[in-house]
Structure formats: structure tokens, C-alpha cells
Length: 343
Image (cartoon, rainbow, N blue to C red):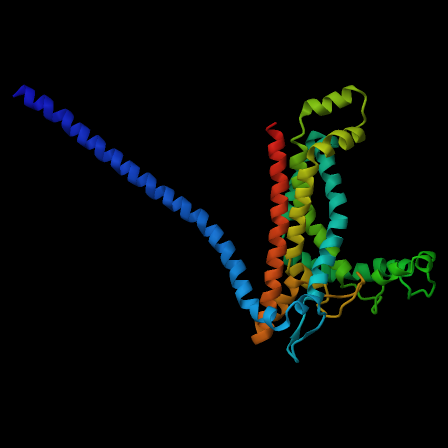
């Protein structure tokens, strides 16, 4: 009797343990499937967004061919569309934004990592993070009602007086007389109208400074302390340590951070729509009004039909591809820094 009980109890425990193991294995497998579905959902959304914009914009690509990229005509009344003006507006505003944002971000990051006292680093870093959290429409309203009038009254007249072939004061500068091609970038039919590519670029610069400076600060902090202390011990100044140690060590990641800011600038919509002017006249001048891809879509998509809607989807696909390539390059450069850390 005792032998029968002692044999039955271990057998029951083994059965229960086997059941628990089978249940755990099944639960782990289901959990893995759920996680894999979440990851694949992101890829599916990415491919779906690209595929849907290409599909809906295919009519415009098929109708206008390669001329869709080179034509400056955007005429809904005659159903003629070209993407050159929105593309130039997007590239121009992003270029001006990087031109001003990169040096300022570089200075902010170096100040916070190399020069600023410890008590000041926290408040300045928090202010930068708060600046990144402000909604873009606030930047747009600030740009339209505050910054654009300031540019029209102080900045634009000075630029035109010094770099335009038709200055408001009537005196063509020495630089324009000897470098005539520079005038095409600073001419304007409306000298006292603040909105335009230049103003939109400056507003974008303010918006992307928090992103670029945050990335730069993080990568500057990855420089081994022993390298900097060794340079200081040899008598190097702060500038020499920054230029000869910090910048070479983090060059790739710094460029990656700049590309992240560029991706943000290329896709910004509301702030640019407020201050760009939203006109479809091709011009090389940074002081003229224009249109970007994002602002064109935001302003026209609600009432667009047929070929116009297809053209908007086509430029949306172009923006998607360009932004994806820019962000991909940024990620690859940041990954190179992590690989460098492991060596």
C-alpha cells in the first residue's frame, strides 16, 4: 500500500510540472509572436505610407513624366503641375535653417560640456528641452506676427542695400558691382514684406537648434576624459582640446545629429506655412516668398481633386523618400560612433 502511494505522488508531480512547462512554453511563444507583430507593424506602416503615396501620386508622375520635377508651373485652373517651386522652397528653407542652427548648436553643446559651471548646466539643458517641446504652430504665429515684421523693418532692407542689384536706398554696393551673381539671391519685389524663404529658414533654425544641440552635447560627453585631461596636462587650451580632441573623436556623430535636424526641417509644416508666403513663383532669391512641399500639401489638400490631389501625393512621396534617406544617413553615422566606442 505504502509503495503504491510513494510511486503515484512523484508521477503526479512530474505530470503537473510537465503541464506547467508546456504552458510556459506556449505563453512564451505567444508573447514572442506579439512582440514580433509590434515590430513588423512599424515596418508595415513605413512601407504602407511609402506605397500609398506612390500609388496615389502615380497619375501625376505618369502624366507629367520627368517634367514634373523640373517644371515651375502650378496652375490648378489648367490642371498643370510641377514640383520645382515646392522642392526649391523646401531645400532653401532647410539650407538657411542649417546655416544658422549648426554653429549655434555647436556653441551650445560645447559650452554645456566644456565651459559651463555645473550649476548652470541643468537649467540651460532644461530650457533647450522645453524649447523642443513647443508646438510648431506657436513658432509659426511668433514668426508671422513678431519675427516677420522685424525682418521687414531691419534685416531685409540691410540685406538688399548691401547685396541686391536694386537696393531701396538706390546705391549699388561694391560687392554687387564686382560679384553680380550674388544679387540674384537677395533681390525682392516687395522690400518691406517680411515673410519669405529667409524668414521661414530662420524660424526653422530656432526649431531645430534643440535637436542638434542635444545630439551634439550627448556625443561630446562620450569623449574619454583621459584624452581631454592628457591634452590639458600637455598645456593645450580649451579651444585646442575641442578642435583637436573632441571634434575629431565625434565628427561622424556630429554630422549625424545635423542630418537629424535636417530631417526635422524638411518635414516641418505649420510654422513654414505661416511665414513662407505660399506663392508659386520660381526665384533664386532667399528674400522672395515661396512654397515648401509640406506647406503646399497643408494649404491645398482639403479642396484638391483629381490630378491636383495626385500631384500633392506625388510631392508627398518625394518628401517621404528624401526625409527617409536623410534620417537613414544620420542613423548610420550615429551607429559608427557606437562602434567606435567599443574599440
